[in-house]
Length: 270
Image 1 (cartoon, rainbow, N blue to C red):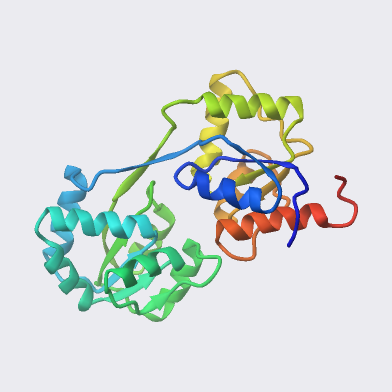
Image 2 (cartoon, helix red, strand yellow):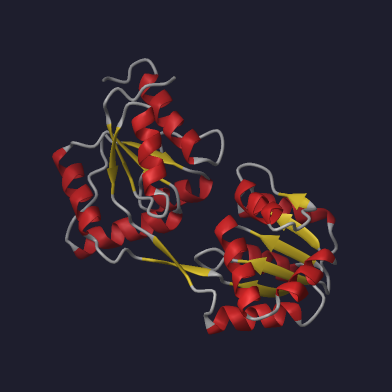
């Protein structure tokens, strides 16, 4: 097994922080958690409830599911509204597309049929590629958003003549307590961090915003930067930060393994 050999590996993940810390320790690294993002789920939110009602009011031709937690929150919201049966019926009559393994697992647990799967690295580009062979002109497409709008996806679908119904099951917000992020900024300044793992673009935005509010600049020179995928990598590049390694698969375990393999390369000092 690739070994981190006691290196300090910082990360900004919040929801699955304990899992990521355990993975780092399993590879003999020292985890440094600085949760930079929190997911706020509100199944009873009026906007989501209205979106569920709208989605169930007419036939759905294509349903696009982007995240596992989003799937579960949408179904919880539908259950609260007394519309789960109608939602299932609409999905039974539609083409169901998933972005990757997490929404796949969630829908299978709920007994929902899956017709199309976007391949690795599970980005918007792959979703659009899978939909290339489907005539969307005049068709109704349901899109489950993640913690932020996805204008690239929605605009591309509209340009093909689709009518979009969006569901926003949760929002990404800043951490309530910025102290762990400030502590990470201090550790970076001292040079006591060996690697930083990024799992979403929103983490990048929040890291730099919190740093700016505290009159800091993330001291990332000499720190090995790992990104979960191309979306997170692009966010880092917008801030002038180059990524040193990417995982082969879109899982946190693969990201930690990529970190260990990076340090194991010839010429990377201990």
